[in-house]
Image 1 (tube, rainbow, N blue to C red):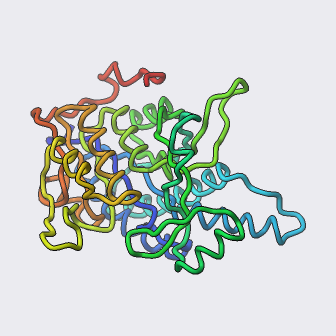
Image 2 (cartoon, rainbow, N blue to C red):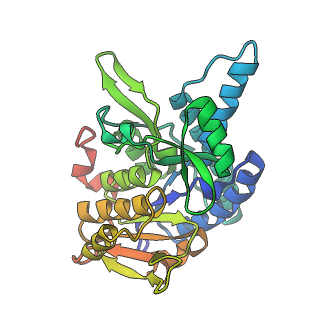
Image 3 (spheres, rainbow, N blue to C red):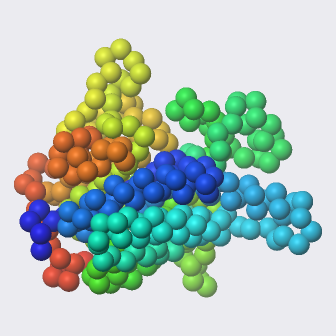
Length: 336
């Protein structure tokens, strides 16, 4: 075992992966180079990713085909989420395999189509907040809303996007399989797009129209795997308070109490930075001695060594890496 080895869950933003397959291939290659460097350092890496642009595009394309094509059936939203996991995972796998080959790393990577249990009574179903799909002008959004009944919200000054419910993740259905893959030395891509949201029914699991926040699901996965670190990669190098206002200040390291104080002050935008900070708090509160980092893809390597990003920490001393096979508590698949 290499000195300083960590089990790290890396959450890649869907917007960072591009809006077309061509853009995605190019941008995924860059992400793969960063992740491959972390693997080369000896770290145990698990990857989660967003799918906001991708699932929205797939859903719009399938709806268009169903309305305008004579033989195309309507495709439910959960199935669109599964499709997005497949094609994003495919691109990530290819890019990572190439990056490993360049470094002489004998590593295999696999994507897991992941279902995540949610509560069908979650209040989020009455208040859609999760942005998906492309950006529109206010006028375009109003026109689509009038025709299709979708809900739109302004997204951090970048335009208007469709929003869907974003319930909290309760349990990762494929967790046992993910653990076994990690044990065998595989690099695992999981909870893509936050996972396909499912609810329990008398007849088993059923997909539901929603998008689970990928940072919340990645945090949940990191907790279940007893990861040493959660890294949430986004479009900025650090988090800020008073963002784009007088007194703007970059946050380098904050405690859980400070993070909660800033949330109470409304410092973090709902639907963008707020769920990232909340996901970090959830992880650090669940596993004292760990830390979570919010940073850009470019700064990921430096962030692991405490030289970049916004670090959210607990007051307890950092814990040592523990292999999964020696951590008996990790096998309680039905917990929580």
